Image 1 (spheres, protein in one colour):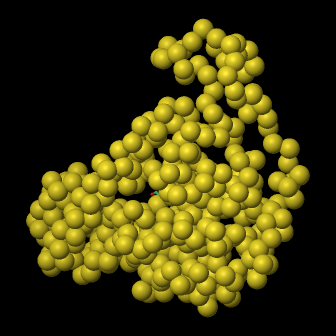
Image 2 (tube, rainbow, N blue to C red):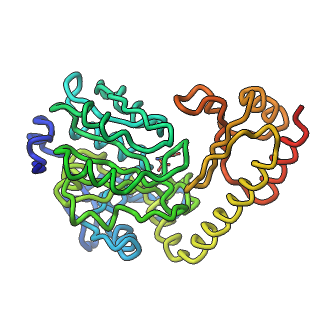
Image 3 (cartoon, protein in one colour):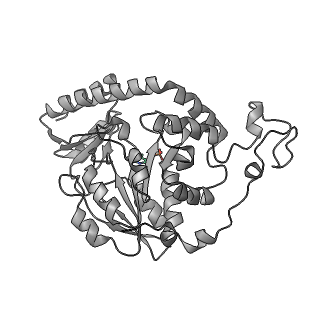
Length: 349
Ligand SMILES: Cc1ncc(COP(=O)(O)O)c(C=O)c1O
């Protein structure tokens, strides 16, 4: 199996002449900037926000690079990982011809972006143990399959996929394998970021929205070969990461220790939450989780969901999702929040 980026790239993207922004044509020091139709008189906030931000976010990427041990040229930043998903589909999938493969139950946005882009979605459901169905994948993948999305740890099931299974697909599929590691910081599994050198067809997706606690800033990351990153840079909106986000993320990256403490606190609270949930008679099963949420099976999950909602406690009802019948997905909260949840469930009749 040999991966050929040119073979899977859409012809219109191959031929595309990207927009050349003022800030990409000139990025050095100068006395007077009269090239980008900015407001030369300033802004009502601080004086820097009148200027367009760095389109390729080099300073931020360099700092991420030291933490992730990936060269800045192998990083694409997106307006949340949701933008990264959309860019991948738009770069590689011809509408009405190509398809992507997903493994439900999984994160909903792969399908939504495929639908928006008029790209077919092939579903290969997970086995009942929430692991990949390799035979099903082999049967589903055809010559028009450009992307396969794996989510590990998976939302909403919480488990990590077997590394060997993912490697099997990476070795045998000549399209791109996207591994969404939004929840990797809560997991004992190794990240696939370390495997980038071994697989030219690998894209690893991570986000600042979970362990980093910065969902409001909208910052997602794709790690991949320079060739794949080059394609995504070509089609992304020129200034997709705003200046405030770039500045705040740079500051946040100085606080890795605090983030690690939050991760430890979350994992500890997850274990306490699981321990308390399984003691409740209405809880039939709590699935093992490598993420900052747990999937819990309860008889009459929808009634319990509505009861909790009335008490002002909002969880995610996944009852209608394949393989998640009668399941609620519960995000790990603070000790006080988790206690309120458990108390409310104890009083449910
Ligand atoms: C698996 C997974 N990927 C990606 C995202 C979205 O991340 P972002 O906030 O970076 O767009 C989520 C959000 O819940 C998620 O569960």
